[in-house]
Image (cartoon, rainbow, N blue to C red; front, top):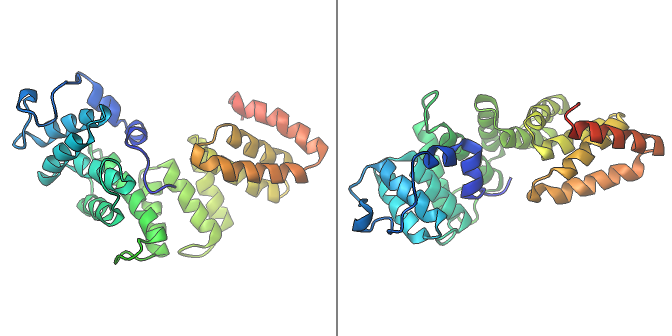
Length: 267
């Protein structure tokens, strides 16, 4: 997983765009322009909304200002949005340590079951897992694979997030942060691929291929390549091409048929 996904993708993942879009309209006024009716004393959610629309309209400085005021008032979503911007260097100088601190603050607050903050909390867990997995150079945040694995497990098991399930499976498969266990890795990959995670489908297909189910494994890898996210397409295609070169002509033909079935939702 990359350090953090774009704000728009995260919004889609957690339903944020839908919740913000209902009954709201964009405005020509700057986020904290008096004409907008919003100022630093406004309610946290009002500041968040204007920060969100400022961001969508490309006015990132205004978005940051609004988010900061809302975050100071304890608004989790604003803190999350700021953390994403710092992690990506999006409208502000990239600062992984600052992002790490914000994600940590969100995670330390916990979340009530069914809370509107659930998506922000779960995303913070995944972001923190990524930081612990690679560390942040020249900071106190060092590589801690055990902590990374535990955070992925929490996001994967409690919230059922496919990306967390995929990354957890990869760690279990390679023995990062704990013992290696192919059976457990396959379980998490299967959960993630059932929710449309192409990387999980491809990696599970490769494991199945190596275990002797050549046609089905190749079909899964091929279907994954056809539906992969940009960050996964390179390694998925390389893996699929290698398997294709090793498969028999009979298995290749069978895989083509299975791939079509998978695309049609038969399997």
